[in-house]
Image 1 (tube, helix red, strand yellow):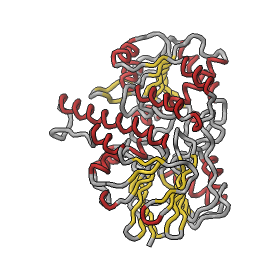
Image 2 (image 1 turned 120 degrees about the vertical axis):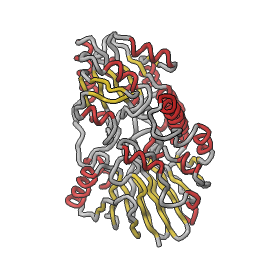
Image 3 (image 1 turned 90 degrees about the horizontal axis):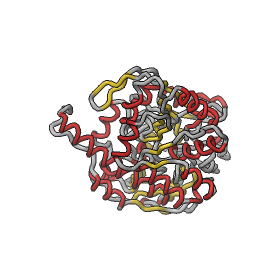
Image 4 (image 1 turned 45 degrees about the vertical axis):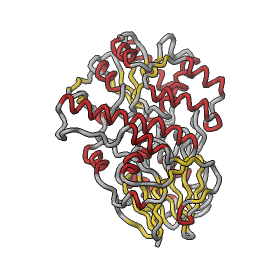
Length: 452
């Protein structure tokens, strides 16, 4: 019997883990960390419904934390197989996992020193050595080539857009073809290639981050310029929480285009994220994986000041001259951006600008929903700054683009499974697919098993 079970990423946009089971063979597609709401974060500490020792392989669609961040823990708990992905995804995962482990070690140490954790002592979910051990299990494979998996299954990866190395995953097993979308990118994106069509599938598992929404089609660069212009006129600073991989690099390009159009004048731009700086360097290494010409990208990167050292970052927070600061994390859940929010949020002249999806329970979500104070470092920080959101800058496909990708299949699948979305987004996509494509579509519950 072939079955599909979502162990994460159902009813939420985090913690993506989808398990294919055929007899004694178990293949896990993605292995993400839960983020946001406390009851979701606590799931990271709960044992998986299947023993990691019994999982034969992991297929990783891309290296964002909500898709790869649980891998070190999976290996710590006994997984011994290979992790299949593209080479760019492996390189990005190295940055993401080592940074995640370092932050968890740091947060646990801080909690122990300040005594505000109920756990004695507070422990990280995994450590830097655990992350380094996980990287040894990665097995990079080429796009478009059929690769053998355990149990006679076969894997084919295709571009998904979204971020460097991101793919859709086609798995042929037991005479059935299951296609996983991973996270789909935008069509016509200025940096990433379009998601590639997949010709056929018996079953499709699709994300639904923006399943019930359409992105604003207005000029993103112009909108970005308007936010910066009015902030600078007030004498303020624009702080942009940006995902270190993907959004930070696209924003660098957008800001360069804005400068070319005369929209930035002499406003300095800082990238305050060592991981984002390293991710930017990966675009040079994997030139075929994005649209930018080398000279164009070099000019865009040269227009940004890179901040790596902690003391430089502190000086940036203390600097009250108008500027733009790009800093991770994108949902304001950790990283250096928290220090910048603490420094600039209390002043009405400044702006906090969000450019990507904000999951429920994150500081980013609370801010765009109007919170006038946020808790950081054990203190409540007043929010008097302007809070702006430009969802057209998101790297996620919207509802129209998700349906566009689905329309690339030659015929209807036996069933479409809609995952990786908050309930209203997943249900909105389900209703639209049934209405417009007349496909059988289901929104799985976490732990619900489906016989294929």
